[in-house]
Length: 254
Image 1 (cartoon, helix red, strand yellow):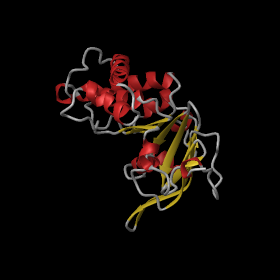
Image 2: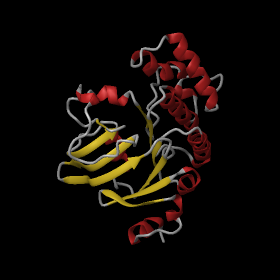
Image 3: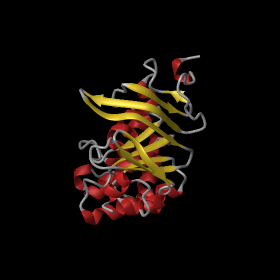
């Protein structure tokens, strides 16, 4: 059995969950960002992360995608420990879709080339097949006919929709979204949130860091409030209107 196939030992993760995090600790020097954090995301579930700036939402997403070094604890995908140092990080990332707040599209590539890069080079799919799927995905996010455009020719909302399309194109086990509307003009926020709502309606498993409370109410199965380095309160979207802890009430301005 390879390291990538080895079951998790020690910490009791949920083997049925797409994502199971136990006892996660991430620090930068003396600054501890995540401490003893536990979180599960089930198949087809949309979990929304709320929390003040600096609460660790982005750090958690980056740790799941193995972009941050984990000091302690376990991140498991479908019951397999991906924080095991013997596991190939690129293989793990190929199973995840991560959308950043700053789009991270390649400016020198067309949208078609941006979307097909990972399917062709990482997943080894034939160019014609990858391009056909990319064209269909661009149509799905409202960018039909723009496959030959460069990112600089698009609005911020269009670039973010293209970034979402790119993340979806490989059929990820889990879609990670990091404050994807924070860099947008207010007039463009709605169009991106509408796309994410349509993605959610297809049953895509999602972990979303956001400050958009309306979006959380609209699409979340569960809301997790991060505070003091861990999930401080968790529940249905109704906790936004009826927080169970003073910390969440303070965050919401109540």
